[in-house]
Length: 289
Ligand SMILES: N[C@@H](CCC[C@H](N)C(=O)O)C(=O)O
Image (tube, rainbow, N blue to C red):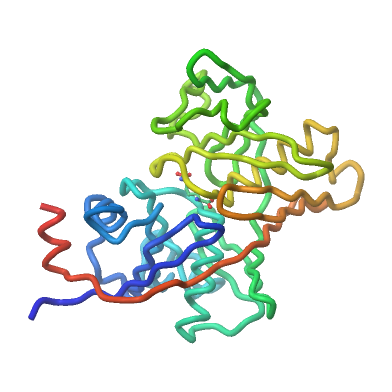
């Protein structure tokens, strides 16, 4: 009988992930293996993989082990590595609770963007402290077909270009990454958000994610959108001394983002485990080639 690898499937506002618990970092999760797992026809299917490793067992997280027992080794669906995944960290927390590693309440999770604090509420929602946004100077432009928009460069640990559009349909089919210029603004690639207004402090967005394509939600993207919208509206909690809360609708649901006067951003939304099972290690080895 061939070896089996445990997995779970989960999502946060339909940003979906294959969760691979591997506490001692024993698996060789190559980019090809991640891409095979995320393949929606030949694999399990997902926007990315949440590789669940003890911080002490991962070279990229060892230094955070005193602050956070678990490291979210996040990978995009094409196998590439990303610094941070906002929906992923909420689903990661839900997995830790589901597996009995943590109870509801507060916990910390190590990520490539640093240690994040998470609160698992009784009502089921999960809130994550996303850190501060960085707003690099310089104009950027997003193009789809004949249309171009000025965009805001926002870094949430990972890079984003936020464009305000008249109609989300103008983003087109998003089968390929929308060009963003100048390319020098994003040497490691970029996630692109298209945003329309829905009401006071309420917007809707679509996203093309680096390494995953169009997804039904992006947590770091929603935070980037909330900050870009606030600045466009002349709102800066650091100046007013008052927190600003934005509702961001994504195709897969709704996220609520609060920026505090100290710049810290909190994001709240659902996080769900939908299935668990076993991967046939022989299939995976064959799929990787
Ligand atoms: N879906 C994620 C972001 C995942 C990483 C992103 N594709 C990147 O490469 O930066 C989220 O919820 O934040």
